[in-house]
Amino acid sequence: MVKNVAVIVDSSFYIPKEEQQKYNIYVIPTPIIFNGRIKYDSDWSSAAKFFKDMNSAKKMPSTSMASPADVLKAFEQVRADGYRQAILMTMASGISGFYNMAVNLANDYQELDVQVWDSKFTLMVSGVQALLAAELLAQGITREEIMKKVALLRDSTRVFIVVDDISHLKRTGRLAGGAALVAGLLNIKPILVFNKASKIVAIGKERQMKRAWNWLLKQYAIDAPDFDRPIRVLFADANNRALTENWQADFHEKYPDVITDFIPIGPLIGVHTGEKAVGFVYMDDWKDIARHH
Image (cartoon, rainbow, N blue to C red; front, side):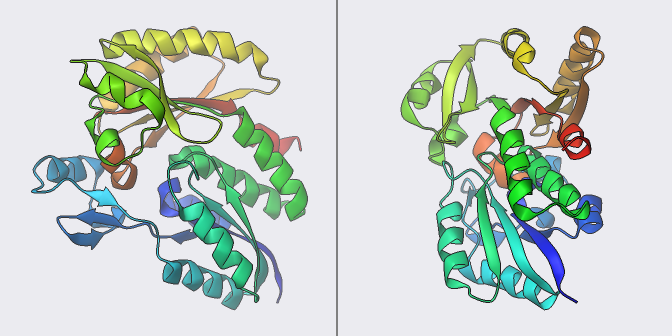
């Protein structure tokens, strides 16, 4: 049986297992280099365990791109499962060379018609793009139409990251422009965003997380009226759940009608953000797009 279109992502999307199974989403593993060994997210039972190991590591961990062999393995699996078309979604091209590599591999792989998509983000911020695509595929929408809807979702997305310690982003080379300049300032919590080129840049800095939260709330109040659809807000953290629960509760008090979700910052991205980083994200509600396409 020739099936419709497969959805493939890299493991930075952190799509929960149940959703992977529900929509049959294929995941390409992205390696973490830990004390000279190749490891994967699944090697740690929790983010807390990973950060404990990271904080006591002899050498700070880094990440590597998924190997071409793993990408081709995914293509072969998809084809063996009866698909002739696929959408491969990658983490932001501004922070990883994976997108460009995937484009080259897809062009060379004749047995499967693969469209490579730059999600321009990472974590479940990218994951919801894959869920939207999978949901629309289940409804029988064409790939071309689906990508227009996914583009709407991607373009509506605003991501803010507040890091407790910027040295990790500096160390792993994931900061663009002058963002590293704020790193030398003691006790500063830099507020970072993905810019249009999907690179991470600093747009603000506060002395405390509480002030950073007030800054983010002000920014949300400025941006929210520009949305035509219902908004979905995501809170993320790298083993700092008490803080994000606090922020989430405060947000609910101010905006009781807005849907909020929690998403984890796991080991693969935690290598770059360091422990205690938090994320605040808002976008068109992907479920609303899926319902009213």
